[in-house]
Length: 346
Image 1 (cartoon, rainbow, N blue to C red):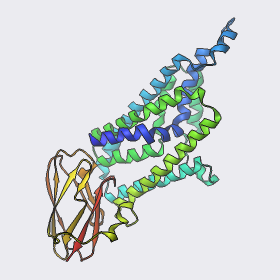
Image 2 (cartoon, rainbow, N blue to C red):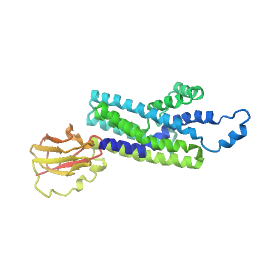
Image 3 (cartoon, rainbow, N blue to C red):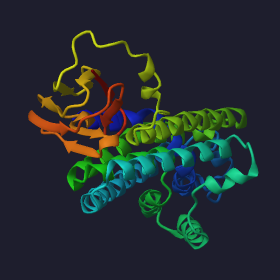
Image 4 (spheres, helix red, strand yellow):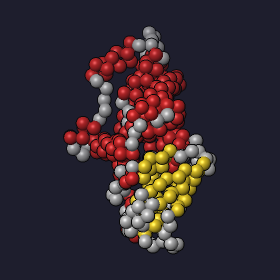
């Protein structure tokens, strides 16, 4: 349940902004046809219609809702496929790390493209093939008013934004089709309020406000790209990850280092965050969960190539090989969101 809440909140905040910047064109095409049909001047009513054009048409909410409903359905189906693919591929922590870092780099490039930093970053934009773009335009012009937004909403799976790609990686990492579908459903549903609000008020946005909105979105994508790269570095066990920067400043163990350790995985992370183990001998690490529904169930020790999916409630024992004194081994969840470390001492 915690993972679904996180996915929903991500869509409700940052996901909605970044996806709107990428997929807003398809949504605009959906609404444009309905507005045109609603306000096309009829013989003898040209002046009345011209006055009506001063405000957004009441019926413009219908194509927006159809577009968003179709989008939610399409991404839920995509989640099923990603979960199945993840179960077949059995992604290792290293593969997940590469995936997160790659997504983060793309998000950084996309943000710099939106900031107009350099023409080279135009390659970070994902756009449909030209033949598909032409087909979309023909559909928007000649298609039925309600069929067009349904069709275009489903097409958004072909141009996912950076945040959506990160969520797709999380869904694939679950290795469970139903759980992955639920994550994509929650995330896409979370993006819908932002899409609806901005699309409905789009006719009232001036050029200056629109430019500010795009720059704010670019900044959000930039920040999310940094965090995505950091998640990848955390999964890779890199000392460059934010959570590992303070490893050298950790004080000595308040109690003697032990060969028997207990770590509790909760919905909000791991407790204690720092464990002190005896160096030079095998260490038994007991992982305890009690009604844990968050990412902390997917326990990862990158440097030892340990990836253990914990039960919702239960106990799991992991044997750690002997390590030299002074060695620090970071651990985290599979998303690199919850972290901790084991310090080996004499």
